[in-house]
Amino acid sequence: MNSVPPPPEKRWPSGAPQVPHPYAPVQARPPFSKAAIAGFIISCVGLFVFAMVGPLGTAISGLGFRRAREHGLRGRGLAIAGMIIGVADFAFYLIARYLLNP
Figure (spheres, rainbow, N blue to C red):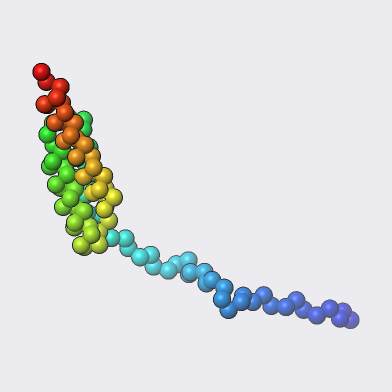
């Protein structure tokens, strides 16, 4: 007969990471702040239209930032970008309006 012992069982150490079940329910992500999206879009449109839309985009983005922070929504980065673009839009408007016109 064959006197070879069977191979040992493979066991993980007790501290090994556990693999999640492949069919585990996925946690839902919070929705975006609609005001943050709207403020970002208005600020971006203001750059191309070159009208005095910057303050409106900045205000709506600020509102979206506050709502995202208070209610745990996504979109804080969009709101910050909308505020920065809105301020830049307003600055470009002021420069063109008062410094470039003779």
